[in-house]
Amino acid sequence: MTQLARTLRTIDYFTLGFGTMVGVGWLILMDDWLQRGGPMGAVLGFLLGGIILLPIGYVYGQLVMAIPDAGGELAFTAKVFPPLVGYITAWTMMLAYLIVCPWEAVAVGRILAFIFPQLDSIELYRVAGQPVYLPHLALGLALTALITWINYRGIQLSARFQNWTTFGLAGLFVVFISAGLAKGTPTNLAPPFSHSVLVSVFLVLQIVPYFMTGFESVAKCAEEANPEFRSRGFFRAILAALLTGTVFYCTIIFVAGYAHPWQQLIGKPFPTAYALQHLLGGQWIVKLILIAALLSLLKVFNGNFVAATRLLFALGRRGMVGNAVAYIHPRNQSPAIAAVAIGLLTAAGVFMGRAILVPITEVGSMASACGWLAACAAYFFLATSTRERMIAFAGEGVALGLIAMKVMPLVPGHFTQFEWLAFLLWLALGFIVKRRNVNVMNT
Image 1 (cartoon, rainbow, N blue to C red):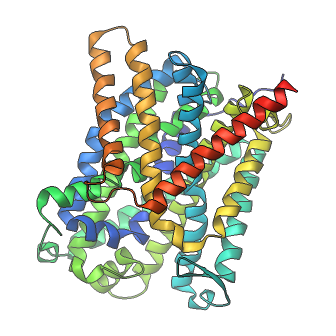
Image 2 (cartoon, rainbow, N blue to C red):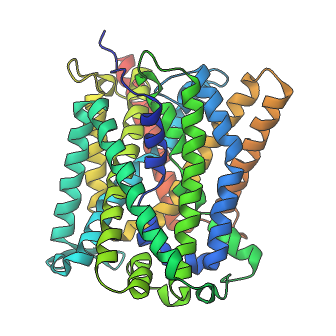
């Protein structure tokens, strides 16, 4: 029987984890972050988010070493809980990865339109009051086709693509961050918080799970490790991705506020680029940032696409959804049909346009936290020492707290009726798919 290709090394797993985590939110949504918490509130929110996610990162590192399975949370929970729990967990976690894909496909049009304003033309229709332009739609669909083709061809091409885009971003990031720190001023950071200190940090902390989702994607490619790969590399790659992602977000937020009075950035289309352009002058810094953003967009799109594809493949392999998605291409050794299916779902999301950007952030946070909770609960029962159980318990507490932030009506920033509708519709679709698959198998 054809198996998935085994080619990945530690560096590939790191770029998968970090690349899946850091997208273009730091360029497109910086004003939302600053409005929520102010510069220091946003920095502290992401820093605290990174710290409290460490127990969850540790749990994933231990689980993937013990259970290297493309199903990730599906495989972990299967060791402890009934199959239905694993299915709901995997289906929910797949949402966290899947919804990032149309997010990035839509974002590419916004980024390129900053350079080529003529792309904001030929309005086709509106979604929630936001226009959908033909050039944006075409760009999003073309990018979706490219990412689908790369993953259809196999993990080796996908990993090479991920490595180049990740390290390309890192190099450009060092350049424009250094320039911003050299010429900015602390007075631009005043006032440091948009609300009270606690509320500012809290409002940012709510969205951190969405922007930090990705370190656990390492588990989804565990079956594709090089035969010489040592399992400890999974653990190292996950923690390195989590720590590096935290440093990245905290640094870029601080520099944006340090470079320009942050309250003047609210409502700007690309606040980070706007701040550094006004500080340094000229278009060169804007072009540099936009190139970095495009590289970041490509890698996070690819990383989430890989993770979503592997989860769908694993569900098919266990007979929980259509068996066809468990097909492995004999030459490419890739889950080819699963890749095409994720590509088609992404393309459908692209038609929603930019109206999906901020609501997706909220739904993605909830979906990620649900997956993390299930993984930590499974590890709690699988762990053989009190110390390991305490770490798992801490991870469960973090995940439950993040979920509570979204479901409790009294908490600022909780789910709106539209976000609840999107989340519940996805769960309903999951039950329909599973029920239909069971009926087909019975007949």
